[in-house]
Amino acid sequence: MRPLIAGNWKMNGTGEALPRIAALAESLKAEPARADVLICAPFTLVSRAVATVAGRIPIGGQDCHPLPSGAFTGDISAEMLQDAGAVSVIVGHSERRQYHHETDELVAAKAEAAWRAGLTAIICIGETEAQRDAGHADKVVRRQIMASVPPAARPANTAIAYEPIWAIGTGRTPSLADIAAMHAVIRNTVENRCGGEGRGIRLLYGGSVNPANARDILSLPDVDGALVGGASLKAEDFLAIIHAVPRDL
Ligand code: PEP
Image (cartoon, rainbow, N blue to C red):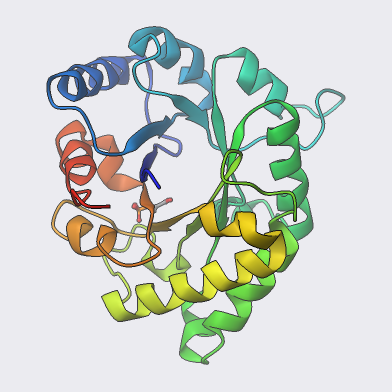
């Protein structure tokens, strides 16, 4: 399985950031990645980012509406993202679940919308700190998978990002043992949900991945890549994370 290192720029970046993407593409030409690389840019940058990298780095979006079009002011459909040149979209990020009250059912509908438009869905799941402290992390994550990953998820159309909410943007990460244990739970649950095909779906870890911890995290079993927020905004750090993919993955 070829790992995936995806950057989530969140609500950061204007046209001034495009040279950063161009520089990243140049660096990857000089030293090719041992992973697939993706940048999930703000909507306003998607088509310009696509033009800037001219197919060298795939570009994704960060959210989509479940429907292809309609009276939904301010929303963007998966078809619109595809039209702008995106190949992928994040759905169910914890910031969407928290600030926009997105439910598992809505997240599943968004994943299906992504597929309908020919995009890969990166479906995010992860527990809060209180849920982990109460010993409920496994149960919460299993429930999220059963409700927000449609059974038709396949390796070619889906990646699942495990992002413990308390680790996002905080500089704190679970122990390596905890990440490995959770990814084993996720693999097992995804296989239950999607059948044998679930074995090939990439499971990304996300939450304060940085150049210093990336190699250890990416070396864990059933960690098939990373979803990187803050560190993806600095080309140097993102490159270091990309090149931290172990040779023998
Ligand atoms: C994210 O928002 O998906 C994320 C993982 O953020 P960070 O890497 O900054 O913790």
